Image (cartoon, rainbow, N blue to C red; front, side, top):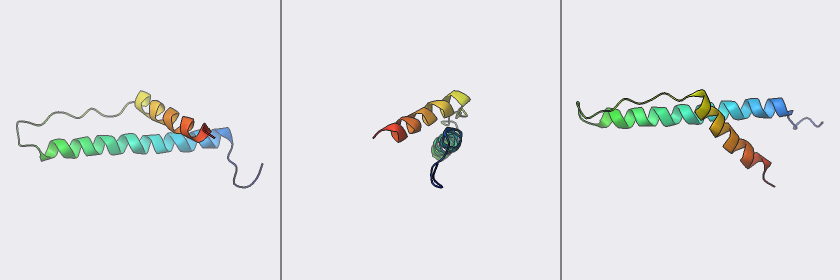
Length: 67
């Protein structure tokens, strides 16, 4: 295995980290958008779930697997 090649575990770990970042950014943007609304018109923003992270990581993994 070359220096630049990652193991499957390392790749999945990296993808999970990226997926968590994507989910966190999505929640942060939604929160900021709600905060811009007038008082009384704001809605709660749900946090991201483990399932959200896994779904996002699977999208990233599928992209990596494309040739």
